Amino acid sequence: MAVSPNGVPPGRRSMLKSKLHRVTVTHADVNYEGSLTLDARLLEAADILPFEEVHVWNVTRGTRLRTYAMVGEAGSGVACINGAAAHLAQPGDLVIVATFTQLDEAAARTHRPRIVLVDSDNRIRDADAEEVAGPGRRHPPEAPARENQ
Figure 1 (spheres, rainbow, N blue to C red):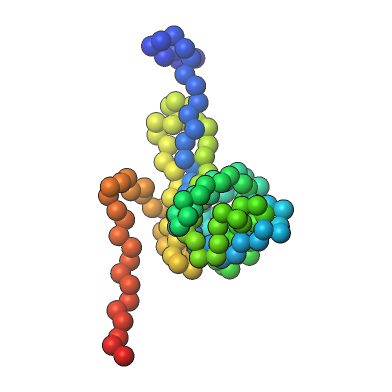
Figure 2: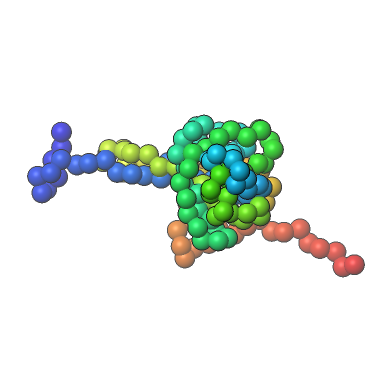
């Protein structure tokens, strides 16, 4: 086992495993027991298993919560915030869904998280995106030109 310069064995690091970036909340059901229901295709793209812990960061409201993932219908685009968490998000809110993993020092230094970008209908735009550090900015695809009416 390697030993750090201060004589303490190196620990494990908590690293971002995967992220669904800017998912649009489609439902908020306060009467459900809890969790986050996501389209099965989004879960697969982000390597999130049913009942895996997820962090949900609400871009619209600035709230954060932790819960677990549940499988929604594939291709439905569903992103339903359930239970008490429904008080922290409403349909139309943009959220980031993230998972983390524990890695030893060597694995942490070469780790690359899976970043999945979605469109406004929660369809996958890029399942292998690179993280962009601020103040840099990812430029969204151009919106279609509107015709004069």
